Amino acid sequence: MMLRYDVIVVGLGHAGCEAALACARMGLSTLGLTLKRDRAAVMSCNPAVGGTAKGHLVRELDALGGEMGRAADLAGTHFKTLNASKGPAVQATRVLCDRDAYARIMQSVLWAQPHLTVHEAEVSAVVAEGGRVAGVVLGDGTQVAASAVLLTTGTFLQALMHLGEKKEVGGRLGDEAAQGMSQSLRSLGFTLGRFKTGTPARLLRDSIDWAALAPQPGDFPPRPLSLRTKWGLGGGAFPCQPAVTCALTYTTAETHRILRDNLHRSPLFQGEIVGRGPRYCPSLEDKVVRFSARERHLVFLEPEGPDSPLVYPAGLSTSMPAEVQLDFLRTLPGLERVEVARYGYAVEYDYAPPTQLKETLETKRVEGLYFAGQLNGTSGYEEAAFQGLYAGINAGLQVRGEPPLVLGRDEAHGAVLVDELVTKGVDEPFRMFTSRSEHRLKLREGNADLRLARHGARVGLVSREVLERVEARGRAVAEEVTRLKRTGLAARLKRPEVTYAALAAEKAEGWPSLPEDVVEEVEVEVKYEGYIVMAERAAAREAEAWDGWRIPGDFTYGTVRGLSAEAVEKLEKHRPATVGQARRIPGLTPAAFSLLLVALKRGGLGGGGGARESDS
Image 1 (cartoon, rainbow, N blue to C red):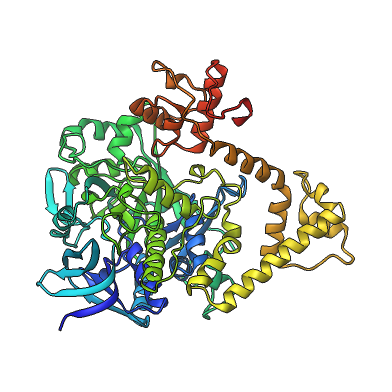
Image 2 (cartoon, one colour):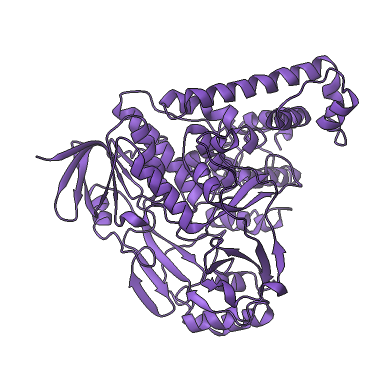
């Protein structure tokens, strides 16, 4: 008798964990398949969650009922608010985790989840009948039927690791590659491409001269990522792990000389690696070549846990030979006598261009088949996890016969992520930035719950208790904003030098006592109200048709003031004939698009299609 489940999730990395938990928590019989059970939820590269835009994604995932934020809080050893001196739209939380504890915590949640079965097996093929998914075939020939299948295969499809001149099949050190799935997908009519990623060496902690380095402590008190942690739901103290202190060092002229002298041994520069790597996390040898005028590059040394002997050197990803790695590592201050536990390497893998997907992350070609994570051409744990949750929710809703969850770009950075993937596609590993969103002033970390918890409750992933707390917070914010406007105090609060706390001290008698998270949101909403209104109007105008506005064929993008080298490269590569075509270039941010409009208008090239002088 053939085994049957409602949903099968193939791969239990960050995307697969969120997908499997979502489906099981929606009451569906779910099978999670992984090559190695004890490698589920392992942090393959950096032992951190969050960061610029990524912290937003984790907060949104948490508001929808996902698990990553809660696991990061429980495993966190170093909490930091990035961009704290800048506006609230770009402030983001980053949590360095105890690498082993994070995987252990996520695995314990998976093993204990009702309706979820985890099985160790390779999947060799997806089975489709009449344009609809029917199940999968395991490596031993066993067939398992399902109403929906989610592929979250990470970097494992036809994966090949590079360390100098050495090559080895595998998607991660110590793990095998998935060999049969790529051919199965091609036989179903899917197009595949090739990307690459990389990781730095792991350093022995006791071989580093920490006294010679600039210490980087975390924030105190730390701010959690998850609502459940903030509200003390589920019990336990926060923070749970002992704190660690990180440190800064930097590359030197000698580091760069060693790398340049050994470029002939780099698989990246010798054409051995054919897949394109992530622009925003290039290998060190790539940075030294591309940014040859830079005298040094910062390196953040991150202990992998309070008791771990290993340190992760963020910024030193490389696929150079081992002896070259050791030579250049010892040119960094504080690392003169460093010892290496494991050398860095690059991984090439197959991905499926995401324009083959619907807005729910279901494939257009096979009904009931969903793709999520690095299979869709993204990079990063957080991007993968959000896709996994989103695909899991929509697969579960389809199996239950309910309408899908499709978030708008004005509701979540995660919605921008999905929309960019499925409408524009990717030509390099995709990373989320707040600048990709035209609604970024609205989509802040601090209001993720107010924006999204109702959606999580609707699908059954957010409890009644959490939803009631969110709704109470939302009412408190709205009532206090209304009171401030009614009394004329909102106008004073809009002034940069005036804070809510100052007003409260001045008007002490009868002033309401509100929770800190309510006060923070009130202050942001009042101070940024005008900016948000202007940004929303600009976003509405940008949505008009631009295809009638032509760009001269000889236009020189490098002369546009303020345009980044990345944006110039993309525009020169695509040479769009119209502003509309420029707007659809993968990865061209709204900020870069606005700069292009200004330059065209200043050059007397303002065009039709509804474009007006005020649109910039």
